Length: 433
Image (cartoon, helix red, strand yellow):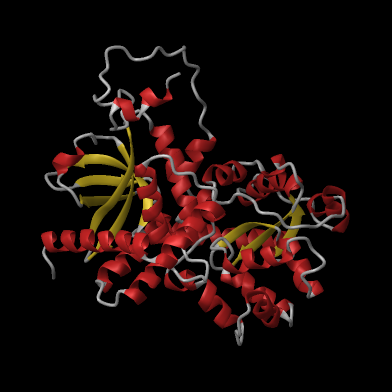
Protein backbone atom coordinates (compact mmCIF):
# COMPACT_ATOMS: atom_id res chain seq x y z
CA UNK A 1 0.00 0.00 0.00
CA UNK A 2 1.28 3.44 -0.91
CA UNK A 3 2.38 5.83 1.81
CA UNK A 4 0.41 9.00 2.53
CA UNK A 5 2.97 11.17 0.75
CA UNK A 6 2.93 8.88 -2.29
CA UNK A 7 -0.87 8.94 -2.44
CA UNK A 8 -0.98 12.73 -2.11
CA UNK A 9 1.58 13.09 -4.88
CA UNK A 10 -0.34 10.67 -7.12
CA UNK A 11 -3.64 12.52 -6.61
CA UNK A 12 -2.04 15.91 -7.29
CA UNK A 13 -0.09 14.76 -10.36
CA UNK A 14 -3.12 13.06 -11.91
CA UNK A 15 -5.29 16.10 -11.26
CA UNK A 16 -2.68 18.35 -12.87
CA UNK A 17 -2.47 15.98 -15.84
CA UNK A 18 -6.27 16.06 -16.24
CA UNK A 19 -6.36 19.85 -16.23
CA UNK A 20 -3.44 20.16 -18.66
CA UNK A 21 -5.08 17.61 -20.95
CA UNK A 22 -8.44 19.41 -20.89
CA UNK A 23 -6.75 22.65 -21.90
CA UNK A 24 -4.44 21.18 -24.57
CA UNK A 25 -6.64 18.52 -26.19
CA UNK A 26 -8.45 20.17 -29.10
CA UNK A 27 -11.61 18.05 -28.96
CA UNK A 28 -12.00 18.38 -25.19
CA UNK A 29 -11.21 22.09 -25.15
CA UNK A 30 -13.89 22.69 -27.78
CA UNK A 31 -16.37 20.54 -25.90
CA UNK A 32 -15.73 22.51 -22.70
CA UNK A 33 -16.50 25.76 -24.52
CA UNK A 34 -19.76 24.27 -25.80
CA UNK A 35 -20.55 23.10 -22.26
CA UNK A 36 -20.18 26.67 -20.96
CA UNK A 37 -22.41 28.04 -23.72
CA UNK A 38 -25.09 25.36 -23.36
CA UNK A 39 -25.34 25.86 -19.59
CA UNK A 40 -25.09 29.67 -19.85
CA UNK A 41 -22.07 29.74 -17.53
CA UNK A 42 -20.23 33.05 -17.46
CA UNK A 43 -16.67 33.07 -16.16
CA UNK A 44 -15.50 36.36 -14.65
CA UNK A 45 -12.51 35.32 -12.52
CA UNK A 46 -9.69 32.81 -12.83
CA UNK A 47 -10.75 30.86 -9.74
CA UNK A 48 -14.25 30.47 -11.24
CA UNK A 49 -12.70 29.03 -14.39
CA UNK A 50 -10.60 26.57 -12.37
CA UNK A 51 -13.57 25.41 -10.30
CA UNK A 52 -15.79 25.04 -13.36
CA UNK A 53 -13.11 23.14 -15.28
CA UNK A 54 -12.58 20.69 -12.41
CA UNK A 55 -16.33 20.07 -12.12
CA UNK A 56 -16.55 19.55 -15.88
CA UNK A 57 -13.64 17.09 -15.92
CA UNK A 58 -14.86 15.00 -12.99
CA UNK A 59 -18.64 15.07 -13.51
CA UNK A 60 -19.63 15.72 -17.10
CA UNK A 61 -19.92 13.88 -20.39
CA UNK A 62 -18.84 15.11 -23.79
CA UNK A 63 -21.29 15.78 -26.62
CA UNK A 64 -20.92 12.18 -27.85
CA UNK A 65 -21.91 10.92 -24.36
CA UNK A 66 -18.36 9.85 -23.45
CA UNK A 67 -17.53 10.73 -19.87
CA UNK A 68 -14.60 13.16 -19.75
CA UNK A 69 -12.67 10.91 -17.37
CA UNK A 70 -13.13 7.95 -19.72
CA UNK A 71 -11.93 10.03 -22.67
CA UNK A 72 -8.83 11.00 -20.69
CA UNK A 73 -8.19 7.34 -19.78
CA UNK A 74 -8.47 6.32 -23.45
CA UNK A 75 -5.93 8.94 -24.47
CA UNK A 76 -3.64 8.34 -21.47
CA UNK A 77 -3.46 4.57 -20.83
CA UNK A 78 -0.55 5.02 -18.40
CA UNK A 79 -2.64 7.13 -15.99
CA UNK A 80 -3.15 5.79 -12.45
CA UNK A 81 -6.32 3.66 -12.70
CA UNK A 82 -6.90 3.61 -8.95
CA UNK A 83 -6.86 7.41 -8.75
CA UNK A 84 -9.10 7.75 -11.81
CA UNK A 85 -11.59 5.32 -10.25
CA UNK A 86 -11.56 7.46 -7.09
CA UNK A 87 -12.17 10.58 -9.19
CA UNK A 88 -15.23 8.88 -10.71
CA UNK A 89 -16.74 8.32 -7.25
CA UNK A 90 -15.83 11.77 -5.93
CA UNK A 91 -18.61 14.09 -4.81
CA UNK A 92 -19.13 17.62 -3.55
CA UNK A 93 -20.83 18.51 -0.31
CA UNK A 94 -20.58 20.85 2.65
CA UNK A 95 -18.72 19.73 5.77
CA UNK A 96 -18.77 21.19 9.28
CA UNK A 97 -15.32 21.27 10.90
CA UNK A 98 -15.54 19.52 14.30
CA UNK A 99 -11.83 19.31 15.08
CA UNK A 100 -8.60 20.51 13.49
CA UNK A 101 -5.98 17.79 13.62
CA UNK A 102 -2.29 17.97 12.80
CA UNK A 103 -2.70 16.83 9.18
CA UNK A 104 -6.45 16.61 8.68
CA UNK A 105 -9.91 17.96 9.52
CA UNK A 106 -12.46 15.95 11.46
CA UNK A 107 -15.72 16.93 9.76
CA UNK A 108 -19.39 16.04 9.53
CA UNK A 109 -20.84 15.82 6.04
CA UNK A 110 -24.17 17.69 6.03
CA UNK A 111 -25.45 15.57 3.14
CA UNK A 112 -25.24 12.17 4.83
CA UNK A 113 -24.60 13.11 8.48
CA UNK A 114 -21.43 11.00 8.44
CA UNK A 115 -18.14 11.95 10.14
CA UNK A 116 -15.02 12.01 8.00
CA UNK A 117 -11.34 12.63 8.61
CA UNK A 118 -10.37 14.69 5.56
CA UNK A 119 -6.75 15.01 4.50
CA UNK A 120 -5.97 18.11 2.39
CA UNK A 121 -3.61 17.97 -0.58
CA UNK A 122 -1.75 21.01 0.72
CA UNK A 123 -0.13 21.78 4.07
CA UNK A 124 -2.52 22.70 6.86
CA UNK A 125 -0.69 26.00 7.28
CA UNK A 126 -1.99 26.99 3.85
CA UNK A 127 -5.56 26.63 5.13
CA UNK A 128 -5.39 28.85 8.19
CA UNK A 129 -8.56 30.65 7.13
CA UNK A 130 -10.61 27.57 8.04
CA UNK A 131 -11.53 27.62 11.72
CA UNK A 132 -13.26 25.35 14.19
CA UNK A 133 -17.00 24.88 13.46
CA UNK A 134 -16.70 26.60 10.10
CA UNK A 135 -18.31 25.03 7.04
CA UNK A 136 -16.37 24.10 3.91
CA UNK A 137 -17.85 23.29 0.51
CA UNK A 138 -15.46 20.72 -0.90
CA UNK A 139 -15.00 17.73 -3.18
CA UNK A 140 -13.68 14.59 -1.54
CA UNK A 141 -12.32 11.30 -2.83
CA UNK A 142 -11.61 7.98 -1.13
CA UNK A 143 -8.52 5.84 -1.73
CA UNK A 144 -7.68 2.78 0.41
CA UNK A 145 -10.27 3.78 3.05
CA UNK A 146 -8.74 7.25 3.51
CA UNK A 147 -10.53 10.44 2.47
CA UNK A 148 -8.89 13.41 0.79
CA UNK A 149 -9.92 17.01 0.17
CA UNK A 150 -9.50 17.22 -3.57
CA UNK A 151 -10.75 20.79 -3.86
CA UNK A 152 -12.16 23.41 -1.47
CA UNK A 153 -14.62 25.65 -3.28
CA UNK A 154 -15.84 27.88 -0.47
CA UNK A 155 -15.77 28.44 3.27
CA UNK A 156 -18.62 29.68 5.48
CA UNK A 157 -18.14 31.00 8.99
CA UNK A 158 -19.76 29.06 11.83
CA UNK A 159 -22.61 31.57 12.05
CA UNK A 160 -23.58 31.18 8.39
CA UNK A 161 -25.28 27.81 8.78
CA UNK A 162 -28.24 28.74 6.58
CA UNK A 163 -25.95 29.45 3.60
CA UNK A 164 -24.10 26.21 4.29
CA UNK A 165 -27.42 24.34 4.25
CA UNK A 166 -28.42 25.89 0.93
CA UNK A 167 -25.12 24.86 -0.64
CA UNK A 168 -25.55 21.37 0.79
CA UNK A 169 -28.92 20.95 -0.90
CA UNK A 170 -27.51 22.22 -4.19
CA UNK A 171 -24.88 19.50 -3.94
CA UNK A 172 -27.52 16.89 -3.07
CA UNK A 173 -29.42 17.74 -6.23
CA UNK A 174 -26.25 17.25 -8.28
CA UNK A 175 -24.97 14.24 -6.31
CA UNK A 176 -28.03 12.48 -4.81
CA UNK A 177 -25.88 9.39 -4.18
CA UNK A 178 -23.84 11.38 -1.66
CA UNK A 179 -26.64 11.01 0.92
CA UNK A 180 -26.04 7.26 1.20
CA UNK A 181 -22.34 6.95 0.41
CA UNK A 182 -20.42 5.50 3.36
CA UNK A 183 -23.59 5.52 5.48
CA UNK A 184 -25.56 2.25 5.54
CA UNK A 185 -28.02 3.63 8.09
CA UNK A 186 -29.02 6.41 5.69
CA UNK A 187 -29.29 3.87 2.88
CA UNK A 188 -31.78 1.80 4.91
CA UNK A 189 -33.76 4.96 5.69
CA UNK A 190 -34.03 5.84 2.01
CA UNK A 191 -34.99 2.30 1.06
CA UNK A 192 -37.84 2.34 3.60
CA UNK A 193 -39.08 5.71 2.33
CA UNK A 194 -38.92 4.47 -1.26
CA UNK A 195 -41.03 1.42 -0.41
CA UNK A 196 -43.58 3.57 1.44
CA UNK A 197 -43.87 6.07 -1.41
CA UNK A 198 -44.32 3.29 -3.96
CA UNK A 199 -47.06 1.59 -1.93
CA UNK A 200 -48.98 4.82 -1.33
CA UNK A 201 -48.64 5.96 -4.95
CA UNK A 202 -49.67 2.72 -6.67
CA UNK A 203 -52.52 2.10 -4.23
CA UNK A 204 -53.90 5.61 -4.70
CA UNK A 205 -53.55 5.88 -8.49
CA UNK A 206 -53.54 2.18 -9.47
CA UNK A 207 -50.49 2.97 -11.57
CA UNK A 208 -46.83 3.83 -11.15
CA UNK A 209 -47.16 6.87 -13.42
CA UNK A 210 -49.51 9.85 -13.69
CA UNK A 211 -49.41 13.03 -15.76
CA UNK A 212 -50.58 16.42 -14.50
CA UNK A 213 -49.56 20.02 -15.18
CA UNK A 214 -47.07 22.40 -13.61
CA UNK A 215 -50.01 24.55 -12.44
CA UNK A 216 -51.23 21.67 -10.27
CA UNK A 217 -47.92 20.04 -9.36
CA UNK A 218 -47.27 22.10 -6.22
CA UNK A 219 -50.62 21.24 -4.65
CA UNK A 220 -50.24 17.62 -5.65
CA UNK A 221 -46.83 17.36 -3.95
CA UNK A 222 -48.24 18.86 -0.75
CA UNK A 223 -51.24 16.51 -0.74
CA UNK A 224 -49.17 13.45 -1.51
CA UNK A 225 -46.75 14.28 1.33
CA UNK A 226 -49.73 14.50 3.69
CA UNK A 227 -50.90 11.13 2.38
CA UNK A 228 -47.50 9.53 3.01
CA UNK A 229 -47.37 11.00 6.51
CA UNK A 230 -50.87 9.71 7.28
CA UNK A 231 -52.38 13.18 7.67
CA UNK A 232 -54.97 12.60 4.91
CA UNK A 233 -56.61 9.43 3.60
CA UNK A 234 -57.03 10.11 -0.11
CA UNK A 235 -56.32 12.42 -3.03
CA UNK A 236 -58.85 13.54 -5.60
CA UNK A 237 -57.75 12.01 -8.92
CA UNK A 238 -60.19 14.19 -10.85
CA UNK A 239 -58.44 17.31 -9.57
CA UNK A 240 -54.99 16.42 -10.90
CA UNK A 241 -55.20 13.91 -13.75
CA UNK A 242 -57.33 13.29 -16.81
CA UNK A 243 -57.50 14.71 -20.32
CA UNK A 244 -59.95 17.46 -19.32
CA UNK A 245 -57.51 18.65 -16.64
CA UNK A 246 -54.62 18.69 -19.12
CA UNK A 247 -56.61 20.49 -21.83
CA UNK A 248 -57.78 23.15 -19.39
CA UNK A 249 -54.31 23.88 -18.04
CA UNK A 250 -52.24 23.45 -21.20
CA UNK A 251 -54.70 25.15 -23.57
CA UNK A 252 -54.55 22.03 -25.69
CA UNK A 253 -50.97 22.78 -26.78
CA UNK A 254 -48.16 20.36 -26.08
CA UNK A 255 -44.59 21.38 -26.73
CA UNK A 256 -41.13 20.81 -25.29
CA UNK A 257 -38.84 23.62 -24.16
CA UNK A 258 -35.71 23.58 -22.03
CA UNK A 259 -35.97 24.26 -18.33
CA UNK A 260 -32.84 25.51 -16.61
CA UNK A 261 -32.31 22.33 -14.59
CA UNK A 262 -28.63 23.09 -14.22
CA UNK A 263 -29.54 26.00 -11.97
CA UNK A 264 -29.74 24.31 -8.58
CA UNK A 265 -31.52 27.34 -7.13
CA UNK A 266 -34.42 26.79 -9.53
CA UNK A 267 -34.63 23.10 -8.69
CA UNK A 268 -34.67 23.82 -4.95
CA UNK A 269 -37.35 26.47 -5.46
CA UNK A 270 -39.46 24.02 -7.46
CA UNK A 271 -38.91 21.19 -5.00
CA UNK A 272 -40.10 23.51 -2.23
CA UNK A 273 -43.21 24.33 -4.24
CA UNK A 274 -42.74 26.59 -7.22
CA UNK A 275 -43.59 24.72 -10.44
CA UNK A 276 -46.68 26.87 -11.00
CA UNK A 277 -44.58 30.05 -11.29
CA UNK A 278 -43.45 29.18 -14.81
CA UNK A 279 -44.69 31.66 -17.42
CA UNK A 280 -45.30 28.85 -19.92
CA UNK A 281 -47.54 25.87 -19.04
CA UNK A 282 -46.18 22.35 -19.42
CA UNK A 283 -47.00 18.82 -18.32
CA UNK A 284 -45.32 17.10 -15.39
CA UNK A 285 -45.11 13.38 -14.80
CA UNK A 286 -44.85 11.57 -11.48
CA UNK A 287 -43.18 8.17 -11.74
CA UNK A 288 -42.87 5.78 -8.77
CA UNK A 289 -39.71 3.78 -9.32
CA UNK A 290 -39.50 0.61 -7.22
CA UNK A 291 -35.72 0.96 -6.90
CA UNK A 292 -35.06 4.65 -6.49
CA UNK A 293 -38.27 6.38 -5.41
CA UNK A 294 -40.67 9.00 -6.70
CA UNK A 295 -39.58 11.12 -9.66
CA UNK A 296 -41.00 14.49 -10.66
CA UNK A 297 -40.35 14.64 -14.41
CA UNK A 298 -41.26 17.66 -16.56
CA UNK A 299 -42.58 16.80 -20.05
CA UNK A 300 -43.17 13.11 -19.38
CA UNK A 301 -46.58 13.42 -21.06
CA UNK A 302 -44.92 15.11 -24.03
CA UNK A 303 -42.38 12.28 -24.22
CA UNK A 304 -45.21 9.73 -24.18
CA UNK A 305 -47.06 11.51 -26.98
CA UNK A 306 -44.01 11.59 -29.26
CA UNK A 307 -43.45 7.86 -28.78
CA UNK A 308 -47.13 7.10 -29.32
CA UNK A 309 -47.23 9.14 -32.53
CA UNK A 310 -43.91 7.57 -33.64
CA UNK A 311 -43.05 10.91 -35.19
CA UNK A 312 -40.94 13.99 -34.55
CA UNK A 313 -43.39 16.21 -36.42
CA UNK A 314 -46.37 16.28 -34.05
CA UNK A 315 -44.66 18.03 -31.12
CA UNK A 316 -42.52 21.15 -31.24
CA UNK A 317 -38.86 20.41 -30.36
CA UNK A 318 -39.64 16.67 -30.25
CA UNK A 319 -36.09 15.56 -30.97
CA UNK A 320 -34.69 17.65 -28.10
CA UNK A 321 -37.32 16.09 -25.81
CA UNK A 322 -36.31 12.54 -26.74
CA UNK A 323 -32.62 13.33 -26.28
CA UNK A 324 -33.26 14.86 -22.87
CA UNK A 325 -35.09 11.80 -21.55
CA UNK A 326 -32.54 9.33 -22.84
CA UNK A 327 -29.42 11.21 -21.73
CA UNK A 328 -30.52 12.94 -18.50
CA UNK A 329 -29.17 11.62 -15.19
CA UNK A 330 -32.48 12.66 -13.64
CA UNK A 331 -34.42 10.02 -15.61
CA UNK A 332 -34.33 6.51 -14.18
CA UNK A 333 -33.38 3.55 -16.42
CA UNK A 334 -36.51 1.79 -15.13
CA UNK A 335 -38.64 4.44 -16.82
CA UNK A 336 -36.81 3.83 -20.09
CA UNK A 337 -37.39 0.07 -19.72
CA UNK A 338 -41.08 0.72 -19.10
CA UNK A 339 -41.38 2.85 -22.25
CA UNK A 340 -39.68 0.15 -24.30
CA UNK A 341 -42.40 -2.28 -23.15
CA UNK A 342 -45.19 0.21 -23.85
CA UNK A 343 -44.06 1.22 -27.35
CA UNK A 344 -42.95 -1.51 -29.76
CA UNK A 345 -41.20 1.05 -31.93
CA UNK A 346 -39.08 2.35 -29.03
CA UNK A 347 -35.63 0.99 -29.91
CA UNK A 348 -35.90 1.77 -33.63
CA UNK A 349 -37.14 5.26 -32.81
CA UNK A 350 -34.20 5.91 -30.48
CA UNK A 351 -31.82 4.62 -33.15
CA UNK A 352 -33.34 7.09 -35.60
CA UNK A 353 -32.98 10.06 -33.25
CA UNK A 354 -29.39 9.27 -32.20
CA UNK A 355 -28.27 7.70 -35.48
CA UNK A 356 -27.26 4.52 -33.64
CA UNK A 357 -27.80 0.79 -34.06
CA UNK A 358 -28.87 -0.40 -30.61
CA UNK A 359 -30.24 -3.94 -30.58
CA UNK A 360 -32.41 -3.55 -27.48
CA UNK A 361 -33.11 -1.37 -24.46
CA UNK A 362 -30.26 -2.94 -22.48
CA UNK A 363 -27.75 -1.52 -24.93
CA UNK A 364 -29.43 1.88 -24.72
CA UNK A 365 -29.18 1.91 -20.92
CA UNK A 366 -25.60 0.60 -20.97
CA UNK A 367 -24.62 3.45 -23.30
CA UNK A 368 -26.54 6.36 -21.78
CA UNK A 369 -27.11 5.33 -18.15
CA UNK A 370 -23.79 3.71 -17.25
CA UNK A 371 -23.51 5.57 -13.94
CA UNK A 372 -26.72 3.93 -12.71
CA UNK A 373 -25.11 0.52 -13.13
CA UNK A 374 -22.08 1.52 -11.03
CA UNK A 375 -23.70 2.84 -7.83
CA UNK A 376 -26.99 3.09 -5.96
CA UNK A 377 -29.04 6.11 -6.93
CA UNK A 378 -32.20 7.57 -5.51
CA UNK A 379 -34.38 10.23 -7.04
CA UNK A 380 -33.69 13.84 -5.99
CA UNK A 381 -37.23 13.90 -4.60
CA UNK A 382 -36.51 11.01 -2.23
CA UNK A 383 -33.14 12.44 -1.24
CA UNK A 384 -34.60 15.84 -0.37
CA UNK A 385 -37.53 14.25 1.45
CA UNK A 386 -35.05 12.43 3.72
CA UNK A 387 -32.70 15.39 4.13
CA UNK A 388 -32.64 17.16 7.48
CA UNK A 389 -30.74 19.98 5.80
CA UNK A 390 -33.49 20.52 3.24
CA UNK A 391 -36.07 20.50 6.02
CA UNK A 392 -34.15 23.25 7.79
CA UNK A 393 -34.21 25.39 4.64
CA UNK A 394 -37.96 24.90 4.14
CA UNK A 395 -38.68 25.84 7.76
CA UNK A 396 -36.16 28.68 7.88
CA UNK A 397 -37.51 32.03 8.99
CA UNK A 398 -35.12 34.92 8.66
CA UNK A 399 -35.01 37.14 11.70
CA UNK A 400 -35.61 40.83 10.99
CA UNK A 401 -32.31 42.67 10.87
CA UNK A 402 -31.39 46.23 11.48
CA UNK A 403 -29.63 48.00 8.66
CA UNK A 404 -26.02 46.88 8.71
CA UNK A 405 -23.23 49.41 8.56
CA UNK A 406 -20.17 48.77 6.46
CA UNK A 407 -17.22 47.44 8.46
CA UNK A 408 -14.77 50.10 9.52
CA UNK A 409 -10.96 49.99 9.64
CA UNK A 410 -10.63 46.66 7.84
CA UNK A 411 -7.65 46.34 5.52
CA UNK A 412 -8.23 45.02 2.02
CA UNK A 413 -5.96 42.04 2.64
CA UNK A 414 -7.29 41.17 6.09
CA UNK A 415 -9.67 38.21 6.67
CA UNK A 416 -13.27 39.13 5.84
CA UNK A 417 -15.37 39.63 9.01
CA UNK A 418 -18.20 37.51 7.53
CA UNK A 419 -16.14 34.41 8.26
CA UNK A 420 -15.84 33.18 4.67
CA UNK A 421 -12.09 32.60 5.01
CA UNK A 422 -11.41 34.92 2.07
CA UNK A 423 -9.62 38.26 2.09
CA UNK A 424 -11.90 41.26 2.60
CA UNK A 425 -11.12 42.62 -0.88
CA UNK A 426 -12.22 39.33 -2.49
CA UNK A 427 -15.41 38.99 -0.46
CA UNK A 428 -17.74 41.54 1.15
CA UNK A 429 -15.84 44.59 -0.13
CA UNK A 430 -16.89 43.53 -3.65
CA UNK A 431 -20.56 43.45 -2.57
CA UNK A 432 -20.60 46.97 -1.18
CA UNK A 433 -22.12 49.78 -3.18
